[in-house]
Length: 364
Image 1 (tube, rainbow, N blue to C red):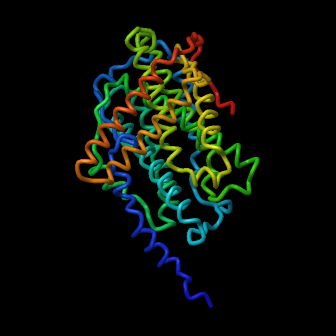
Image 2 (cartoon, rainbow, N blue to C red):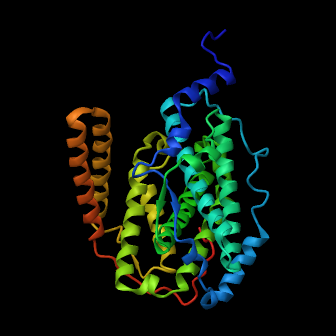
């Protein structure tokens, strides 16, 4: 008889005690997913006439709701051995799930608010479908967390999470990239585990293929929104902003992923390879609407990502140190991170010309 064996209830209580997922989801630290608000009147005033044919086709596809029955557990949902999972992997995987759940729910909150406030039938219909999809995604991830006894209280999160104001064009750039990089992340993991099923340590990865197609279609919607006003991607100032958001989204992903070494080791992927693969897919896709792509093969690219990652680790260490060392350490590390970001931003970009037809179909 194993005197150290625990019941599922005891395990759930232990996990809940070690992981305050509500606090993790509420955390508004620089690298964590945020809740956004914007100028909803400006969004509501968008005229989709310049992209009407492609718009109607996309909305018809969303209306058909191809993933209506997808986000439900079935016979493919294997039993998860939370008790037997390596503690470091368990911690990093729960962090991954909470971060993903928060990001998905953030989209749901923003899209639902746009639908609630708007009067433009085209825009309201779009955001209604996207809020529906993101709610399913967040709920499905939260079910996986609930199975471990550490679900996030999403209703409480709506009231407790700080909101960041972004102008609509910044919402377009950030959310477009978030949706497309989400597609690239999910499909890369799915294809890897399809070829290496022995490394699939949790059943949620089996749902990634159809799931990432939702992400792809949401990105298509924001590509069309940007095409309604050529200045959004063609003016000199907005090209600088696009370059900023590309650099910020890619570098944030790199730093976040390198904080989860056990998670990626369990999946059987090298983090640098995985991130470069995701960047490559995202860059190829984003040429549909952006007039440039980052040169991720430039000799200064990876060294400065590594510098940024080290700076954030120093920042975290300073945060834990307390006293005068905390302030000085955070200031020094922050300066190092800013220098690394500037070095990444100043790498010459590869210019491109977006195609006449903006719509793409998932191809990976």
